[in-house]
Image (cartoon, rainbow, N blue to C red):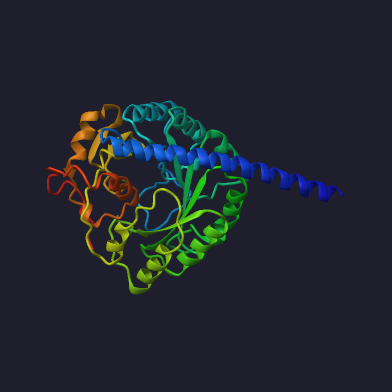
Length: 348
């Protein structure tokens, strides 16, 4: 009898969470449509900012150049100031990355500040630290989106972000998360078994998440052409159902075939990457330029970079910059150029 009552209580709780989750999802969709509408109507604001509160990561993936093992968390008051300034620049979406964001002791307050400004709050995490209680805390903080990249089925020397380790975490998310979850599987970058991406993608869809596939750089931030099997898996994954609003991934077809993309990169304007030191960079793979403190970044900087052509753009693999820049692909030809040699030109 006790077991039956417990089972019924769990069922009722899950049912309530389902309705609550559905209500939040509907509201979130409306807010996202407003983000797109605002971006189409005006080019004078940031669409997405990616901000790093923590360079430290609890993992050490061989291809990654975005973490260390010594950095301290950015103090909360400074993070709040940075969020506030991004709001003054009109940032519609603020995504927290790292390092590993979940290692920041006051992450929930950072998320809450983003939501306080009415912005869409996202996070990129390796998922290792997720448990039901932590997921509920993220719900309460107001998180809108979470992305987890899973690189393989079994952990190896290249990556510990494996389905074997994370599957239980995904089940927790499926039961408790009131925010959108996307699972990104990858090819390239030294990942041993490209077919793992298909297993990961299918598991994500089975649990009710969206699924994407990315082509990753190596440890030096360089793009390596895909091998035949990697290319086959990429195209098979690209054909799987994907329903969330940020599926502007056609650029990856050229990358898969080691061909350049002809596009207008709006990094430094429509997309900002703010490192743990509070400097604005084009993206995670172009740290150092423009390298201006966020507190000094103005609407004039946004206007300049909007019209600036980036020499690294043809072979860029940074999907979030491509996706945000796509909003303006049809307008405002870029009339300025970065000085040769200032940017790392990603080689194939």
